[in-house]
Image 1 (tube, rainbow, N blue to C red):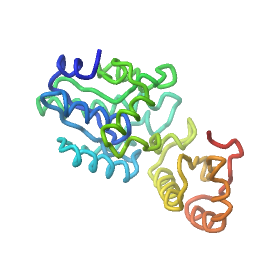
Image 2 (image 1 turned 90 degrees about the vertical axis):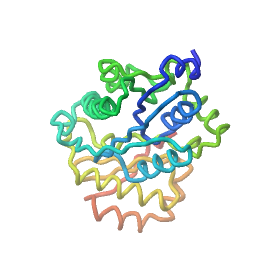
Image 3 (image 1 turned 180 degrees about the horizontal axis):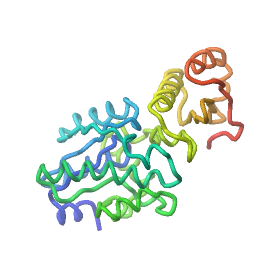
Length: 248
């Protein structure tokens, strides 16, 4: 199946939209092939502000219909408690909100940006999508992340080389309670490192301590800004350390 064939079969769809590489390309394709599509972005404590700005920018550039929904995901006890399958409860809650809104808007089919590279065995959230009958056209059409990036570049989408960015909750270890304060600390720290030129990194948090996971190529940049990074991040963390098992 191609995306054109998919949208001929499902011409009116609601899209769970994150502003990332996959859902961005899916919104573009839906704009070309579907009769009607509406993107739904859920704004919660787990998404940094730049993700919403990227989503708004892309929707504007494509002339797409986008709706922002506010949700307090930490009000879901199983999410806040952060068990190993937290993503299952989070996805079920978020997609439930989207489905309810989409249904009231007249949409009965909900799609998402899961692609053919995503490993279902490593993603508890995909079980929730299956239970809710969410369709994943990129996966159904065999489109991998690398191919989606190539197609996005050909389409002129600014998201084509956007770094993968898992939600803020992934920086907190399993079974450690997630709080708004911890998420805000993570967003502040990562925004600050972005401003210094760091890419494809993570600021992990554990009981108030920060651990930086960086690319080996960016270690010189860390040393160059070491003192100011310590000063800034210690506004939110007790200690700041470097994970010697570098990324990538």
